[in-house]
Length: 103
Image: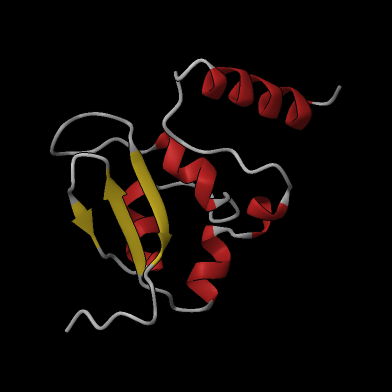
């Protein structure tokens, strides 16, 4: 079993016991959605915590703030982040929905 399979197995076991906030997809498509691709698309990100706090930084701003490698998948970035309002790690990072007007 390689590292990726082992990590996925651990995440699923924790999720089954209710000890994980983040959903772990059953396929590997999530690995393709990286911060670097978001930067290339000049995307606005949606950073949301379970407590209700939301921010909408650009992908470049998010990369500068976090200082992570741009090749990191957004799911892995979500698991590293902590909410500045409540202090929990229940943060999700995703592309801002395009069908909703925020202005």
